[in-house]
Amino acid sequence: MTGAALARTALVLLGALLLQLTVGLSIVIGGAHPDVLLVLPIVTALVAGPTEGAVMGFVAGLVADLFVPAPFGLSALVGCLVGGAVGFVVPYSDRSPWWVPPVVALAASAGAVMLYAVLGAVLGDEQFLKLNLGAIVAVVAVTNALLAVPALSVLRWSLGLSGAEGRRAAGGRW
Amino acid sequence: MAKPRRSRRTLTTIVVLALVSISIITISERGGSRIASGLRSVANQVFSPIRSGFDDVTRPISNFFAGAVNYGSVAQQNAELRHTLGQLRQQQAEHAYQERQLRQLTALLHIKFLDSLPTVTAQTELYNVSNFVASIQIDKGTADGVGLGMPVVGSGGLVGQVVEAFHHSAVVRLITDGRSKVGVAFGATQQLATAQGQGAGRPLAASFIAPGTPLHTGQVMFTNGLADAEFPGGIPVGRVTAFGTPPGAGQISVTLRPMADLGQLTYVDVVLWEPAP
Image 1 (tube, helix red, strand yellow):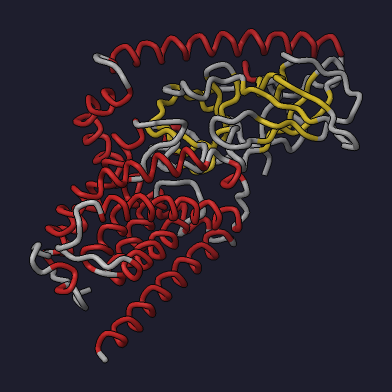
Image 2: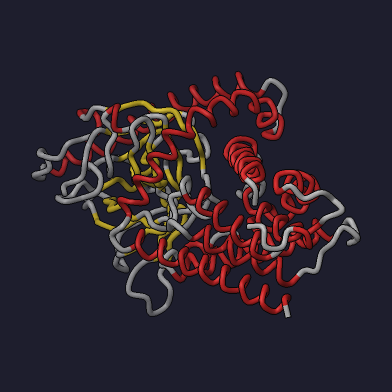
């Protein structure tokens, strides 16, 4: 990854964090709010591959953990696992139908929320499983599905991937 | 051959990242919380002004999503009025508590009541940052005298406790959070119990109340202020909304609605009282 791409990606991460802590927290549906940072590893994995998705998930998760009074590192763990899993499982290219990123973001976000709850419970926060998990899963998954398409363009720009190059060209750059 | 090699390398990267994450969790959960707290403090100090500026720009969008035109000024006034109303409700409830205490003529005179304790009024900057943790971030920190463990009240009763104190901000764990446990007392005989959080937006559960204990719906439970308690005595915590004894159970199952309106916490008061170490 070039220095310029790294700077652009850091900027995107900062923008996503700002968006989450301002507009994101103001959208509360059924007691749950969106998780904008979660869309980053999912979409990064689609456009650049599992390694890049996992690294993005780890970094974005660690940044999120700085602002959440929950077990430090838990979001990083979930982020890297989700980013890696999406990159491994979903074959994606520029020729893929337009609906693939939203559907993948929907499913992966739902999985990430449930994984976070289960791991939190394992670490001693049993309340994570007693919350209104359905509402949290629904809100996070739907908003990330809506954000997937714009996030795709933003992350392609930040990672320095033109549409034609796609994820193949990203191999081994990180 | 190149593809399997890359897959192996990718898998290794993911496993290493996962192991690093697990190590960070382990370190922060087992005594390394100071490191996590330090990192959070730095992040908050650096990021707070940026977020504040961005918040000013995006507030109209946020308010739009919150559901009204010109919502900002009305919401501000409304929040201030609710804060005042909450303080009055809290004082009213506290007076009832104090009267009962005096009637009992117990040796509780040494307990500090909220009226005599100094407070710092703070504004809420962030509310429930995570979907899984019931917390708020306030704009007062160690520079204003706010310290770890200090009780936070407002909007009619106990709101929570300071769990992280930075220079100019602090994180407050709300009483509805699953990790929150508050020692409470209720009734003419000052029965003791523990009120535990069950998650944001959910009622509290009071435990350790023996079957047959006089109890009624609407009864208010206060912080008990016992020696080594986490909170000073006499702060209204919750009102009983339901109770019952399941067959064979050794205690009454009690549900409490927090006295504080935890959905309206634009302003809160931090009580400058630290629990005994």
